[in-house]
Image (cartoon, rainbow, N blue to C red):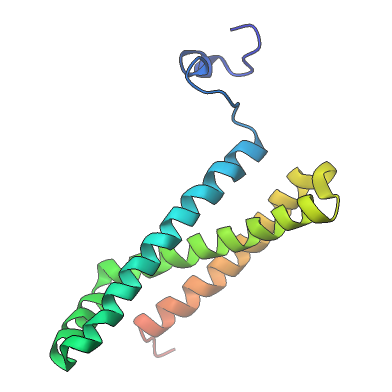
Length: 134
């Protein structure tokens, strides 16, 4: 318990090998978003496979994707892909261009860029989903 920076983490410290630092959070989130992208690819292939079953089957699946729940899912997918891509650029920079000294600054800088791109993308998605006559 002596090396624990935050006292609230004391009960969890014996179960975690790593500490919650920027690098560890980026490492875990990169893997989770990778799993999310793989799940999306499986669902996408399943959706496209309905083309072989006829137009009615495919249109039924496409109608499901036009529900509000799936629109929220598209926003989550966009954020997932955006994070994974930007963090991947950070990893490339650290591994191949000697950016290890700057990995925290790279992470937070790219996350700031990611938030801006995310907000622009969500605004665009919502404008297409909910037409506004302004």
